[in-house]
Image (cartoon, rainbow, N blue to C red; front, top):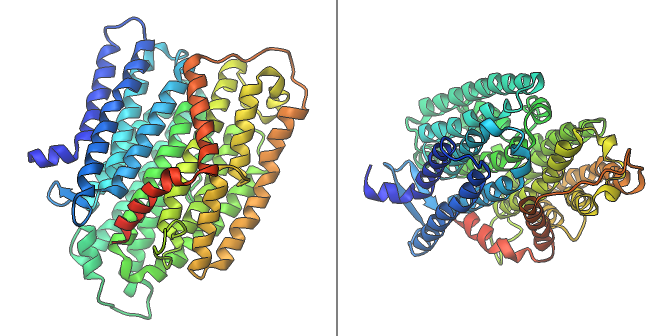
Length: 495
């Protein structure tokens, strides 16, 4: 490995160093709260290194820096996800200070494993070679499996075991798919795969050959688990219900973002010549995911299971942007398929974090995860109730929220791509989702609390919740705050 490779990997290397520092300090310091402070402050280093790389790639003619024998591409697309994952980690670690007091003997391991998982997610967005991609995927997944069991209860143990088994199955499917693609093309590099497939093999068969079709289906199945898209979502409800709430929040946001990052990288780079074939594949998965997720969420009584099915539905909305491959960037580009998906991922991240932060406090203070126990929350804590209500309104897609703008971008890109029926399906499902989201809002403001117990929060938590909630509003009223980044990232991806 050369010095140039180390420079390109510097954000990830600094994250690994930070994880080791936190776990080392856990052995010698008595005030465990310092671990969170060190971790949050330490995130400034990978953030600064990512900014330096952004400036560097902006001066390159092709907008990218390639290293590690061509297996890694640092461009604005990869750096967008580095910024997103570091931001999510900072908010999550600050908000979980109160929650982690319940696991005093595991606080260092908790923070360290989250940082190591994030390292794999950041590598995923930059990987341009199948073996590198697979190693990064496992690096991101294995720490999350361990973190799922940290509540040390029978339910969290069951969730961790189910996560482990199904993660292993999905990894096997993904690996088989990669092997088949390698067998057809003779290379593991995404750009070389794309070049090998540039010449049509058999126009009468999707993807040009039966073998390649099978390989792509296996790859989609493997990544479908990562993004919790139906019908590969079966792990999500139990893992969300049994796992620690901060872990579930990180899983629902950062892991999903990394999954979509590599999906976009693989399909836009390796299979651009057969984009209409995979466009229809993702369009069908989008409808199945959003419909199944919304219908199942309607009948849930546990709020974490409801949010699990909600994330399945939102995976469907995001797949709309992936299906809109015929939409190309022109003008200001904000309605293009890839750009709209990147914007939606950013808006979804801050929205879902806001919702999970409130669930984290209620679960910690009241020892409940049932939706009915949110009755009268506005009287217990107006701040928490308003933040959760605002997040739920954003998840529906009502103005002036970030996901309202995000859905406009996604559905517009579908219409521009000749998939108006897919946009209609998205709008109908958004209306359906209002039923179970607004049911929680009605309970919080019109229901009676079971007692008069007030819910106080720490300064760190209050600050993290305020930042995430304000970000939801900011992206709704001023989307240009990040579209200049998402548009640049999308242009790199589209070549």
